[in-house]
Image (cartoon, rainbow, N blue to C red):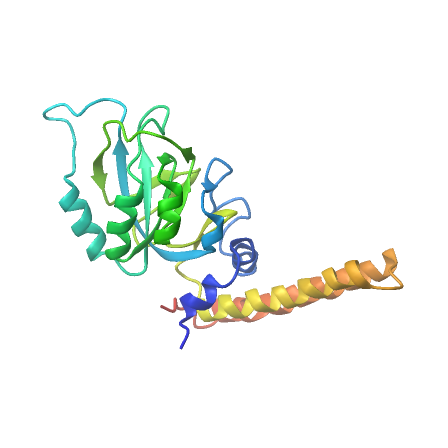
Length: 250
């Protein structure tokens, strides 16, 4: 039986963003990564998971007394995080991306620990091998070398692609980038609103592509129907917020 997270993963990230917009809990320009973050493996589809966070450096070799988190501590941190998880890793080098923590070895280990993908402002490598493992890569770019890679921190907020992410944030990501699903949104309601939005949008697309008697007036009529459907889809979440309040579904 599919869970609510499974059903959300079947929806593309821009539609999840559109559905979140109907709940009126944040401004339209917030809550998603900017265009500095690329989906390296779009063939793997969408990912959804709870954020586990860390910070890395690679350009300068480690010096005694400077911050460093041993890999075993990182692995234990990931293993203890809510599942499914997505690693959100801020590369602290200036500029970021001189080294790499994310290749086929890391992908194999992190998948075993219940982490399905990484979102980083840094670099990744071993692209084809990682694709075969099924681990999602969302990054600034590929690179050849790992350099002097090390974790310098785990936990706490990080900033990747203009998006501030806290541990436990629920993330949805696909070939377009990633968005945070706000904690106050009931996930069953989010699926319902997204599905209603998709159905309404499909009617406009069908008219634009296949109507034999297409007119601008007809298009306006279909768009008005779409806008009305969006309004209806948003009414229930608004009533719930004004009443008992939405509770997050896991």
